[in-house]
Amino acid sequence: MSEGEKARSEASRFDREFLRGALALASKADVDHFLYICDVPIAAEDLRRRKIRHKLVYAVTAEPIATELQGRRYRALVIPAYDYSRVERVKVALVSALSQGAFKEGDLVLCMTGRVGRSPDTLMQMRIGGSLDDRVAIEGVKLGEGFDSQVVDALLQLALQIGQEGYEGHPIGTIITIGDHNNVLEKSRQITLNPFQGLGESERNVLDPKIREAIKNFSVLDGAFVIREDGVVLSAGRYLSATDDNVKVPLGLGARHAAAAGITASTECLALVVSQTSGAVRLFKGGEILLELHQSARRT
Image (cartoon, rainbow, N blue to C red; front, side):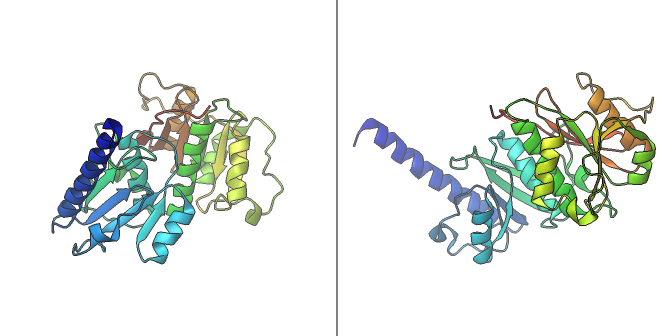
C-alpha cells in the first residue's frame, strides 16, 4: 500500500470513529435531535443498536436523496448545494427545519456537518432559542402566526440562490418583502414596469418553481419585490420610501439594507436582502437583522 493510500485509509477510519462518537452523544437522553447535514446516509450498521432513529433528521442537497430517505421513514429536508462554511450550513439547515416544524423551543440539537462533498468533520450543539453566534439568534426565525413558513422558507432558499449565482455570472442584489402588503404598497412606489401585472394569482405564487425562477431573472430590475403572506407576488420594481430615524443599520451596509430596515420598522412585513457586494442574505423584521447568512464563495 502506498503512503497516499495508507493516509486515506487512516482518514477514513478516523471519519468512521468520529461519526460513531457523534452517534453515541446523540443517543444520550439530553439530546432531542441529531441533525446530520450530509448527502451520504449513515450506514445501517452504524445505526444498529442505537436508539436514535426517532432523533435523526437529514439535511441533504438534492430532492431525490430526501425522497429516498423519506421512503425509508427518515425525516429529511433539502438545503441548497452551495459550499457554505460549516457554521452557515448549520444555520441554513436549522432555519429550514424550524420552518417545517421539525424542532421546537428548548430542544437541544446536535448538528454534524462538513464541506459539500466531504465527510462530516464538525459537531455543534444548538439549543433552540439560544444563540447561533454573536449576531444571530435562532429565535429570530420565529416570525409570528401571520406568515406561511413554506413561503418564507422558499423565499429564503431563493435569496440564497440569487446571492450565490447572480444573473448570467454577474453579482446582483435585491430586496424581497413578505407580508403586510397593503402598507408596503402604500409606503412605496413603482419605478419600473411590473412584470407580474395582469397575471392571475394562481400564476404568480412563489411556491411554483417557475415563479421563483422568474423572480431570479427579474432581480436585475431596480427596486423591491412585494409578496403577500400566502406567496402571491404583487409587484417587482418598487422603490421603498419608508424611513425611520431610529433605525440604524451596521456600518458597511448600504441603501438596500437601510430601505429594508425602514420598511420593516414602519410596517409588519419581513424583508430579505441580498447583498450585491458579497452575496450575503439578511432577514429583517421590526427594523432589525434577525438572520444573517454568508456565502463562502460565489459561483462564477
